[in-house]
Each structure stands twice: as C-alpha cells, then as structure tokens.
Amino acid sequence: MMARAIIVGFLLLIYCINNISASVIRNISTDKSALLAFKAQITNDPNEILSKNWTQQGTTVCSWIGVSRSTKHQRVVALNLKSLRLGGSVPKEIGNLSFLSFLEIGNNTFIGEIPNEVGFLKKLKYLSLQMNNLTGQIPQSLGFLPRLELLDLSENDLFGNVPLSIFNVSSLKLIDLGFNDLTGTLPNDMCSNLPLLQSLFMAHNHLVGELPSGLDKCTQLKYLSLSYNRFTGNLPRDMWNMSKLEDMFLGWNNLSGKFYIWSFVSRPIIPILEIVMTPNISPTRQANVSYIY
Image (tube, rainbow, N blue to C red):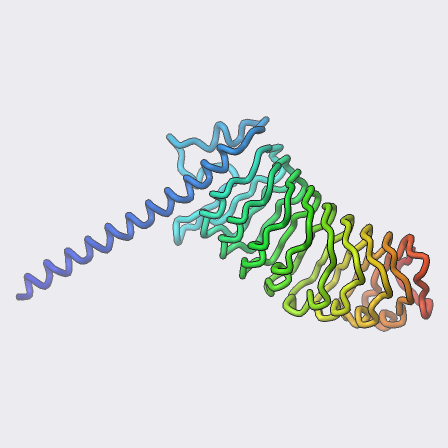
C-alpha cells in the first residue's frame, strides 16, 4: 500500500512539473511572438538593432536589446527602445505582454494609432510614447490600467477629447499630454480620483472652456502646465489652495479675473507663476513670487 502511494505521489509530481514547464514555455512563447510582431511592424531601423538582435534562432528573449525579463515568472516585464531612431507602428500584439510594467518607446518616429490593446497591460506602471508621430485619439482603454503611475504621450499628433477614463486611474503621478492637437474641455471633477498626481502637463493643445474648478482636489500637485490652449473665464479661486504647488503655467489663454498671490506667500517654496499674454488677469497683492510674466 505504501509503495503504491509513493508511486502515485511520484506520478503527480511529474505531472505538476510537466504542467509548470509547459506553462513557462507557453508564456515565453507568447512574449516572444508579441515582440516579433512588434519587430515586423518596424519600417525604419537605421542602426539595425532589432533586425540583427531580435532573431528567432540562436538567441533568447532575455538577450534582446531593450527587453528585460523577470527571473521569478520568466516573463517580459520591461521594453525600453527609447531614442533608437525606430520607425513603424505599434501592433495590437503589444497587449499580449501581460507581465509588462515598463514600456518606453519615446523619441522615435512611430506612426499610426495607439492600439486599444495597450489597455490589456494590467501590470503596466510606466507608459511613455512621447516624441513620435502617433495619430488618432487617445484610447479609453488607457484608463483601465490600475497600476499606471506615469503616462507620457506628449509631442505627437493625437487629437480629439482627453478620455475621461484616465482621470480614474488613482495610481497616476504624472500625466503629460502636451504638444498634441487635443480638443474639448476638462471636467471639473478630474482630480477627484487622482490623489497621488504630482505633475499635469497639457500645454500646446486646443483645449477650451473654463479651467476645472476642482483642481485643488489634486492635493499632491506640484507642476501644472496648461499654457497655449484656449481656456476662457475666471481663474477658480480654489486652485490657490493647492499647498504643494511649485510651478504653474497658464499663459497664452483667454483667462480673466484675479490671481491670489497672497495664497503663496507663507510657503517655504514660492511657486513660479506664468500668466503670459493673459491681459485680463491682475494680482490682488504683489508678493515675492519667483516670476510672473
């Protein structure tokens, strides 16, 4: 009876090992296929980095330039291809890298739209697609990345409204959508679910309407840049309650009213204010602000 139990236990162990091995191989295969699909969309690789290094034969994924893999799960966790002069488009297969936490392909010449499948990357913390030639609207699916801390889509050709879904990603610390062709308004409650947000950059777009009245709900905000848009109306007085604010840029809009410099006087770090080309705004009290122009 004991011998039989030992045999059964041994067979179960072999079964589990085989299943685990098959699972690891399948996952590595999934990641490799996704990366090869990414490579297939590359149309410009002047340094031949991907064309020579990312090969199906003779190399492993963990040895590919720009790719990092975890030792625990044997899955791709980071893809960093910044400033490699790559051109092409981002394929939907990118969404199959389900363990990816870091995606950086900035300062290249990628074109086309951001695939909705990026929203499948539930472990993603860092997403930078800045300084490319990406077009289309920002996918709503980016608002379903529960761990995202940095979102940088700046300096592209993105258009349309800012998706409301991204304002519900409570883990976000930085949002940079500057230097695009975004239109529409910003909701008054945009800061209600962004308790960790420290930097908000949306300058050089075509945003309209009044400034959100609930910006003070972003209690950790240090840097605010909304210059070069088409905002109108008065400055919301509650925005001067942002105790962590260091730099604020609102110039080249159509704002009016008064800004309350006295709100900043008692702070250890005096904010930099920029209200350039907004002639209808006047201070209620002059103070030792770093600069106002």
